[in-house]
Length: 78
Image 1: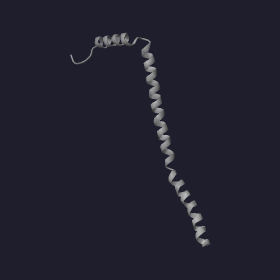
Image 2: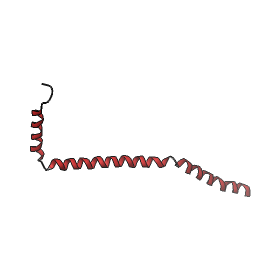
Image 3: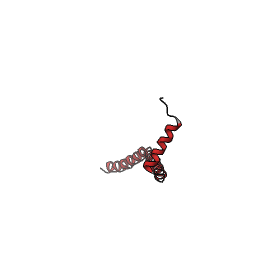
Image 4: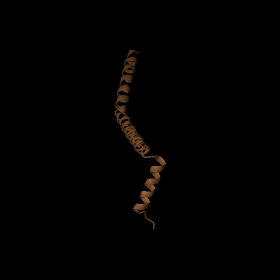
């Protein structure tokens, strides 16, 4: 009594077809597939954006070295 038989599922399928119509179900599935693709694309973009952040400390180190060089030259002039 707790599980659904094939007749229960057929009745649910008929009700869904009556409510949504046979033409709307493929459209809904297509929209859902587009949403899943957009979600996966967003995840990949986030991973790609996180990957270049690791070389950033090297760029900061190079900037710090470049900033230190003019300071050394100014100290030598005085």
